[in-house]
Amino acid sequence: METYDALLAAIAPTTGQTRTILDPATGQPVGEAPVHTVQDLEQAIAAAQAAQPAWAALGHDARSAALLKAADAVERSAEELARLLSREQGKPLNGPNARFEVGACAAWLRAAAGTPLEPETVVDDGETRAELHYRPIGVVGAIGPWNWPMMITVWQVAPALRMGNAVVVKPSEFTPLSVLALVEILNQELPEGLLTAVSGGREVGARLAEHPGIGKIMFTGSTATGKAIIKSSADTVKRLTLELGGNDAGIVLPDADPKAIAEGLFWGAFINTGQTCAALKRLYVHDAIYDAVCAELTSVARAMPMGNGLNEANVLGPLQNRQQFAVVARLVDAARDSGARILLGGNPDPDQPGHFYPATLVADIDNSNPLVAEEQFGPALPIIRYSTVDEAVAMANALDVGLGASVWSSDPTEARKVAARIEAGTVWINKHGAVDPRVPFGGAKQSGYGLEFGVEGLKALGVPRVING
Ligand code: NAD
Image 1 (cartoon, rainbow, N blue to C red):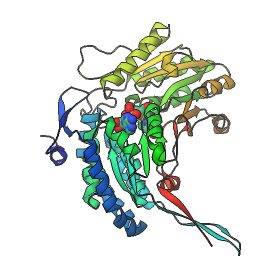
Image 2 (image 1 turned 90 degrees about the horizontal axis):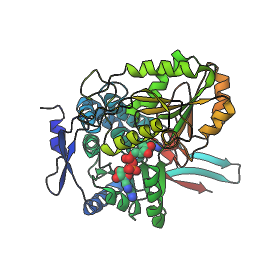
Image 3 (image 1 turned 60 degrees about the horizontal axis):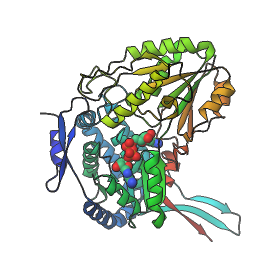
Image 4 (image 1 turned 90 degrees about the vertical axis):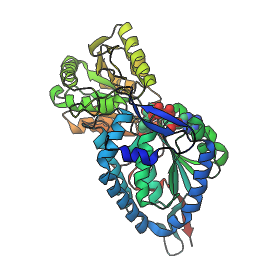
């Protein structure tokens, strides 16, 4: 018996094809997920279209009240949701992982409910009075990845609902149970048909992106899929928010204190066992403190327990799927073969069940090495030596992605000067990857476009309407 059994039963498919979802830590079955079809998608869109006008007519206050109740519902079921998430995604209950993710769902629902959005008077000069309002888009499609399946669904769904839209969610085929369970809980407080999860494969996502009944796609996932969505949404000129892949650089300035920053660097890179869009994926360290940073980081990383997520002691888990394990293994092997120095890890146990790859630190690596240039999306951090700040900034900006970045220094003024030279959607100082529902978040370059969170995030889920009289 597991605490989430009732939830699994509630989302269990009664008809149609099903798929057994396996625990990435053990290979054991977690539950049965429906394999929804394009026909199911059509029904969900029709139901959303039917439910949306009445929801829009409720107005902001009543919609916000429903979102606050939905946040309470998530909290009531927090432990069931966290345990199911841990088993399906692999992330441990503790650390910045499953319980943290479910907590973030409630926090982002409350933030979407509580952020004020007033009509703006743009010009009022006696002759012209122009006001900017936002009306609902209609039905929004939300397509998500497998790394933070519940939290990212809420990031997409909460502002969409607040703005008066209905939503059809297409979860990743790797983590459908987490999203179906979350949507089941949210629906305790929402009108029927307004929010539906359709748990199909890529063809369902592709149809959602081209469907004439959908006004906007909120997409979080790889850059390659983002490009496919731009193409398939073109004929209907859909609005898009694209949160795509990243390869975030961190620059450690020579005046940083290696011991003081080591834990922050570790979690910046290894949060969710490295499977995070805005994780630190390439670390540039000044020659003067290179060896000290490597040593401190190694001692922090060595102490972090990895294992089955349901074991309360663990803070690192398996990779969610074998494909991602293969990517990480290939990149670390290529780094080793090139002569880079493995400080820690790089030696997965072939006899261990599950997709565990140990926390891995790679030093003395060339900036052109694939482990630096490609997105590893897993627990392997390359540490590159630099000698001038100009050189570090040039290397940080050299790639065609720019989601996040960070600068580490004992001098905040100096750190801000370097931050202002970096081409990324967010540059953190002495931390990395810390998202906040009040602060806009989005990518630069091929990491995507559009902003989430805060008032900017609400505006992105409405159609601007100017009233000019
Ligand atoms: P993915 O692109 O493989 O899949 C994401 C979703 O897109 C899935 O639901 C999938 O079924 C769907 N999909 C696939 N093909 C489609 C198509 N042609 N049309 C419509 N939908 C389609 O991504 P993933 O492997 O699940 O996630 C990992 C990637 O996501 C990494 O690159 C990571 O950096 C990125 N990511 C970005 C952010 C961010 O906020 N920028 C957050 C999390 C993850």
